[in-house]
Image (cartoon, rainbow, N blue to C red):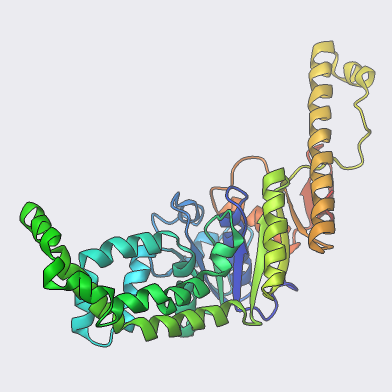
Length: 386
């Protein structure tokens, strides 16, 4: 990872859900900060696993410094700074309105508008644009050397890569232009002759929907140029040479297919594909194809226990062969000859010790690693996949 991330300012960890993106993002950030850089990791994980792993009670929408003393005694020296935050998509969208509004009156009109409150929740709920917009804001601040984004899981890679274009397309779309035109649909909707239904709704609910619509679209007209400019900035950030995408996966079939698809879309979009990280890989190193039942029984002195051990060994070999085949397929279909492989660890990663173990495999700086059979071998073999 040191070579892959050299000179990179933005690292985007992408992939399907449940493959360890949050853990990988945290371990990468910790490793970069340990090298002396000022790093911020941005997560969208509502389960708060990142906060728990870093020993924090909670994370908010602004980066907070992780106390370097938390790493003392865990086998890693923190020479730089590690900051962490959890994206609040709705709050990020509100902050964007605050920045782009031409004056305080327009800002307050939009933020307090009921139409905006409903629409912003729906738009921000997709998370893709707000996540990279937050990266853009943090990058422009100049406060950090490296930003690492733990992206939302998506079944469609284009949802993330195309988010800036889709936002720009909305503001440039014919439907919105017609609605904002003084003599177009907006005028007919807001016109006095067609306000009967709105008047009934106001009497029944107390909500003046007609006024809310008028305020919303009047204010929106003053924000379009700012939104388009920000979307272009976000798009430029994604394609910047200092930005790289890491595709995170596990050896199971669906995550592998997602990883292949995402890697292909990155190349189609001419965005930097920094490589693959394959998590939770099973390996049996140098053992025979089948366990020697007679030898096991002689060693254990119990035929039933020997049979159980033999079955467990067979199951582990089957998983290892499946994972080796998956990594071979990933190499062939993505063109990534040297994926970074993190083995299946005993237990869930839920604290700094767990992050340090993952970090050791990502950065390859541990002297040895324990194989499930109990033997030790140099850690450099972890990157070979099988």
